[in-house]
Structure formats: structure tokens, C-alpha cells
Length: 165
Image (spheres, rainbow, N blue to C red):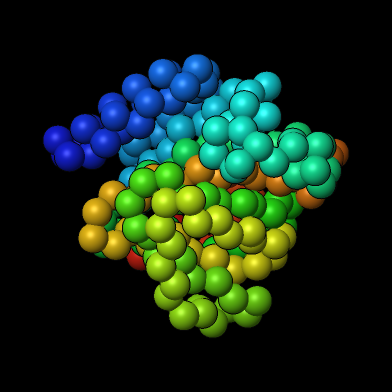
């Protein structure tokens, strides 16, 4: 892992610890960056911290929520993707990121998002998070749409992927 990547992951891990969050999982091996998964029981605290106190009950569609922090590297792109069993809400925490969305497999225009900017992605909506000049840090909440079969990392339909996944 590059020194720069190690530094940003350490910084975000320290920030989450200082905010009182328990990290349930961490993945710094993704070719585009990585993520931290926050303990599900802290979903309301996470919403208070990153989503202006939106009540978790109003966010729930099919049961549980999954709070995460995404870190996207400069000039890296997550896959052009969508999900069958979740909607998502993203809020930029640090840096400027690019996001493309569309209701079809054709990518929409690149829009820039800055700290405190928020985007809601519907179940099935195509989307791509893109790192621009520097590292982007994005708070994410998964809204599970099927309570009997919650979404997971396998619930990703990749339409296009720079890394051949």
C-alpha cells in the first residue's frame, strides 16, 4: 500500500475512533481505495454525524441500515454499477468527488460533489463514484430494500469496470 494511501486510511480510522465509532470491518485493498464498515448499532450516531441527524427510522426501507465510509483515490473510478437489494445515500466528508448516475446502462454526465453535498441513489439506479484531484472521503448508508435478504458486497451488478471484475 502506498504511503499516501496508508496515511489517508490511518487519518480516517483515527477520526472515526475520535467520533466514537466502532469499525466492524476495514478493506484497504480495493484498487480504487477502500472502505470502513461501521457497527450497525451506531447507525443513528452515524446519521447524526454525517447526515444532519436524519432519523434512521425514516431511512429504513427493508430493515437494517449499513453505515460505511468510502475512500476513493485520485483519478480512480469505482465500477459503473447498480444493486438489486439496496438504495444508497452518500454524503461527501472530505475532498471533491465526481459522481455519474443514470437509469440506463449509459453513463450520465460527471457532476462534482463537495463536502456536505449529498446524493440519494435509488435501487437499480446506475452509479459511479470517481476520485478527482485528491482523495475523496464519502459517508454512505445502505438502505436494504429486502428485509429477508439484506444486501451485501455480492449485490453489485457491474456494467463496466476498470479493473476487470
